[in-house]
Picture 1 (cartoon, rainbow, N blue to C red):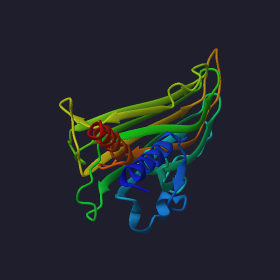
Picture 2 (picture 1 turned 45 degrees about the vertical axis):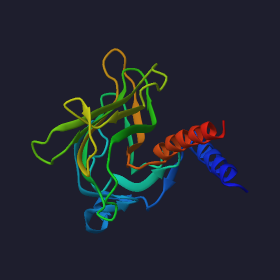
Picture 3 (picture 1 turned 180 degrees about the vertical axis):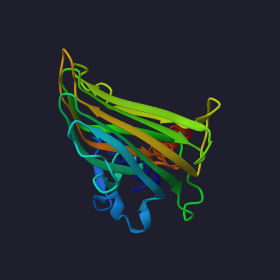
Length: 238
């Protein structure tokens, strides 16, 4: 096979991979946050540390804690981005509320000197609501643990009748409106699962939350570079 055919074959393989349906690739066991060795989790090019879970529960559900919230490291099969899967399994009935904060630090491992974090994805999985029930998650990303600059703000939610249109949010990391590439970020996440009350009672439930963080270089970048190279190759043949 000549070089041009081999190059085209590689591009087709990348294209098929990048257009396939996304799937979660499990890279670590699903364990309580409290059971993480040394309180940290290494996933691909990233290290997750400084985990903290706080919260309240009213009306009957158990109070969120590092013992009841499970975490797993993995990778998105299409983007190649690494991240975390949090297993919550929270249910709120009429006049019930679960309000929790899940915080942690994400950093690029020293063994990846050319890699950076450029954007983030927040996704609610298996979330439902009836009546005035609500599932809401917000993710704030900072460049320091205390008094840092906010680099991104993401929000996902589930309400009755919204058709699941707001389950996923994505944002570039920006400082003063300019995209940035960073080696470490501090993530502050708030999650609310609230049952309806009053004249329109209802329920709310949330099974899992996924949080993904990009790296540069990444598969999509390689694919785009490949398309440019292919166009250049065709020009040379003309």
